[in-house]
Image (cartoon, rainbow, N blue to C red; front, side, top):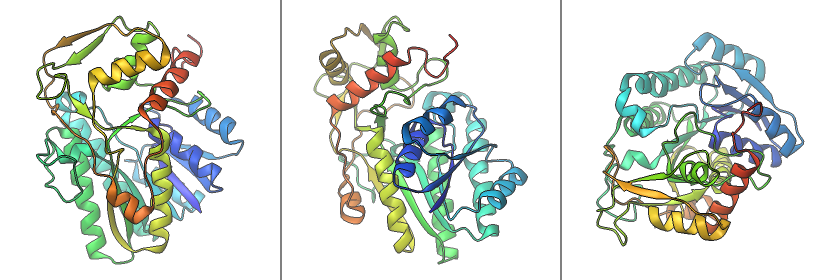
Length: 339
């Protein structure tokens, strides 16, 4: 298939592009590089030993997006392009609504006008908010606790309405939990701009000496060790989930909504100690006050993805820690190879 990947130079997008190329698909990336590097394109090509097309375009620029569609003629779209930091969304909500919701609207309108009606959407467990039923199933109430999660929930609703209005649309909404790890080559991985807002890259940067110590937000949660619980999933498992969703919408119409997670909760301190053990490093840390917008416990019930897609996570927490550290040690400054 000819697949257009918006946000394809980002963390999850880049690993998904490698998986798509390995499966024999033709891939084009649309990305404005606001949170990524052109170096990613070279790395994807090196890993896959295949070519791909890159368009440096903002998904919110309708005229430019139309040119991409007219040039590449995609059969299906995977939509990653979005701002994604929870804390930043609390400080800059308008920026997030503009980028994530308005940008998606532009993309969907172009798809409608070009009669391209197959889409895999990168959603998030953030749409669940502070779910009271654990593990989290897809049918629980949507109640985001921050603007980032709200933008994902809004786009999900837009897609549901599109499918209701036009039965030709085939849409997969993938709600994934906390990505971690990197491609086994160590050539691509997570490279956040500025101070990491997620735990895994923060741990890696402390371990490599880029940051002095890890701040753990909250040590008084009702969990085994007082720190928050999350469902960490290897980024290559997420990538394979997108491939499985593509296969599904190729044969099934309507709207698919599934969690992509391991189904196992892991505390922050468990993550820290596993990273130390697997990689023989020390992670200095301090426990500080809780962070606004964070929740206590969140991990997936991934059974629906297995039932409908035949997909389940394969990699362990040890694998995630090992691959994250390999990426960080090979690339101590991320994709900034001139430093």
